[in-house]
Length: 425
Image (cartoon, rainbow, N blue to C red; front, side, top):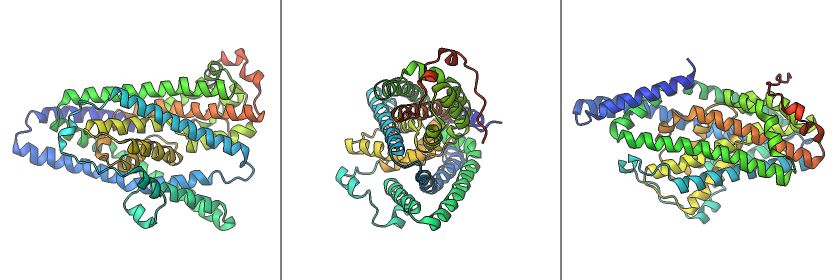
């Protein structure tokens, strides 16, 4: 059975079991051996496994992502424009997500604020800036200080790029290590349905069911709304006012790739179709998209950033914690930089979310609540991710004179919605 379907089924079953056990929560046997016994242990095992992966996944992925910029032929104006636009769109996505979460308060009214959880005391923003550079890298890794780890990973990758043959050997090692780490992710995700079952069953056995369902519904709806707004407003505005391109024509041309991304939930798996659409429907020349699109699949994760921003505020509101302006700024910085290291495979965004939660002192156990409904959100945000990759490619190509506007504006091409054949290597 598909792992995402299993997670959804086990989430529903966990909710049903937890709701039933909630009626017997006063029973000492039920509390000791089920709610605070088997469900507690199973949930903790799953959460600890996610914690175990967080630091190596972020560090190795970011090193590989930054090293992918090492081709000297591609550096210069092209890379500066591309990277700059990717980071700008990710930051705008986070600002939109946080603004919507603050306005609509999706976690307000959730029963988790009665857990007795005490958030860490907020750190002054000046100290955040000072602590960006780790004085002790080993300590940063041991204490999972994500901003420090991200900064060190970027510096480490830049050093690899400037170390000649020795750097090439290290880069090959990290490329292989990245595959191994992602294999561990896949192994742990096989146990995700059972971990989700335990976390959801305990949560529903402990708290009011109606409030939980209502909060999750508003979280889901708000993420979808933010994704749609970002795609239709942010990308359209950039295409129109920065690139001088018609956004309606763009979305018509990218429709086959967006459908493929929605089905696969993977920017990497969709990359051949994205390349085909960008070349045949948008008119971007291969000399440009062969650099911008693979780079985008590595570092441009606007949809994931939106999920992380709203999820963080949702969890904070559910636990009754008011985040300061400095903490909101830390969310934007951490999630933007972490997007460089978000692997282009399904489900990794939730693991990266841990780093954002830890950075603002929130419990990562709350991820279990949203894991079961994340598959459909993952499909939607992947479609947004590849749309952002293509939009930036078109804008950069227009500025470099590397786009065929006759192809871009051809109504015959855009009236054909058949999936292009994937480009073979």
